[in-house]
Figure 1 (tube, rainbow, N blue to C red):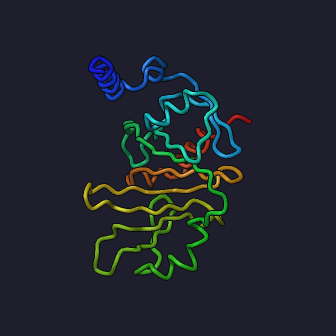
Figure 2 (figure 1 turned 180 degrees about the vertical axis):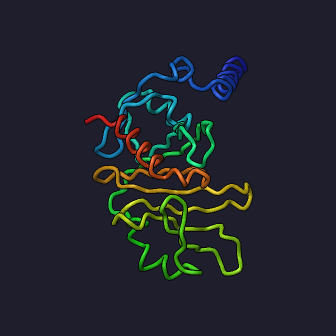
Figure 3 (figure 1 turned 90 degrees about the vertical axis):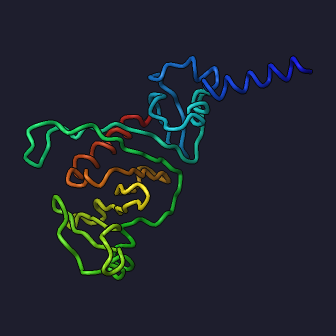
Length: 209
């Protein structure tokens, strides 16, 4: 019994320290196949954000209700007069099978405009901004949207009080019954056109059609 107990503990320590053997032996660029609802994907293992979901994907033809990915995005040449290149940014992407969820854009007129203080303001790169923060408080909660396209780009950006960082959250109906949500640092908002197109194109590139 003592020997079995010791072996069990040793196995637990190995798992906590190094992950499951299948995951430890897998190449991080190994392609994995999975489905989210009726939509199927193939992408490199290292894009999956959590160790638990990596192990599930390695099992072959996994099915997820929701899956989190981490993407590196290179914005390229700076648009603010800086001749250098911007640093790559981390973009968190969630794919979720969730048909019927009301979009942020659908709540813009009946809800967010009524909550906004100070009226509509000009934002970066052609966006309009509504401030949802309380009166006489810093603008730590905003809605930014493209006024030129019906059902176009829209994000909600909030500043976390503990970290001091402001992140923007975007949701898109990617396919029937499948929602693509991604979040990014608010400092990237002036590059919203390129960012939005690149994130969608990236996920489309991993979709099995």
